[in-house]
Length: 151
Ligand SMILES: [Zn+2]
View 1: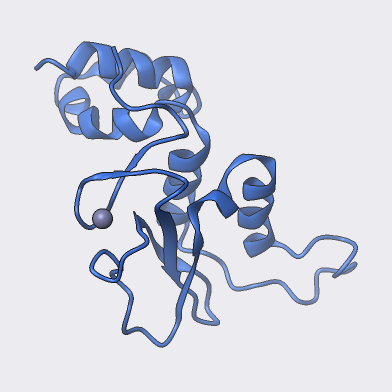
View 2 (view 1 turned 180 degrees about the vertical axis):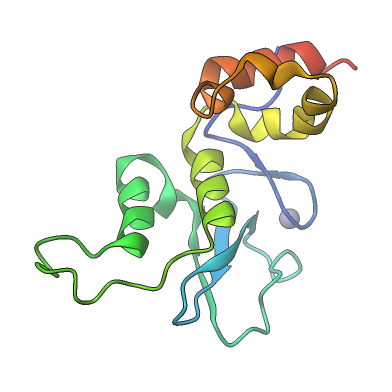
């Protein structure tokens, strides 16, 4: 049985304790070349990892949840056809691994908890019949938690 509430609880990238929409923040660095180094953290200075960076950006975690939250991420990729009809002002490209991982963390149920067991699952060959889509769908993530949580 998964222990974390999907899309309601996360693990702070700094202190390892539970983060919720009420006490969580997303922080990242946003130089002109594109955003990177996304962290889900508590809204506390001691958990911020980019506090002294010139390019630091942040927002409360709930800004990035649900359909509005997905739009927050997509706007980092493209302003859209209304504001930029010919794609002249494309923002810098996000560092894709960090960007896609944080979207999965905030939008795919059970992904956050399943992340704890990915290494064990890889080493056991658990993912061998999964493709690039099925590997992170909620059903697979939940099955990974159930398979590895007591190991
Ligand atoms: Zn924390």
